[in-house]
Image 1 (spheres, rainbow, N blue to C red):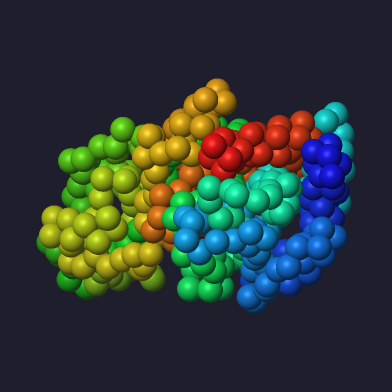
Image 2: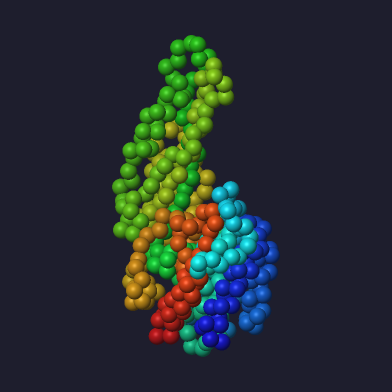
Length: 356
């Protein structure tokens, strides 16, 4: 099969996926369409819930294994859409539709790339591809559920829109619930321990606090108070104020270290993490995968957005066609030429490390 035909087939697959609703945990029909891709090319595959995966034909357990991963679930369309989010339309070189950019373009490009290499012999790495579910919701039945099922992974490419530049690091995420307490009472009476007033200094602390270690790729840890809740009626001083704190963690800290620091230093009555599993990710710039990308003229950078990299413990690279700033926007689109470039660059990149 020619690269041109393979790319055209991948673009058609993306059009089909756009027209099948696939909100997180509701991806059964897009999973079935992805099964059709593997059947079309006579590639054996397996399915676990709504995750579809396969290995290359010449899989050799003595070799290291490279994971190719992207997701086929989407967020729900926002109210700003002027086009049908479930109709694939090409206008002025743009393919419109929900999930076209995030991350359908990456997924179909990786499927085409895997298919290109599937039957080739004597590769330096095994290949495993996972078309995963529940990425947008960080759900329990997504890529994290596959890590005990697929072969052990040594390095990964996670397909997310990066304009085909090399995201060599990605920030992790810890969300905290915090409480600031006071003395409840009637608003008509004096009260020197008003929880709402008490929170003023706490908010200032969160605004001004700086973690010591910055990252070359990801910069500083970013901490933001994103929600606040207190009080139920105008004449009653509440007993406490609830805060939600969003912390984007660089690769200089583990999530556990961030928790320990805030539980020691934050001037709250309590601060509790919701989850520790969305860790920061990185890959050394001297890794052969990154050096191969640099040789192809790709730039490196650190990504502030979260992806399925967060559930991987191996070195991982985020790379894919499309632009992250279009994700979750109204009238989402990806350029057709970005898809063509995506397939070609993925194949050129992997050729440099699989066939040296």
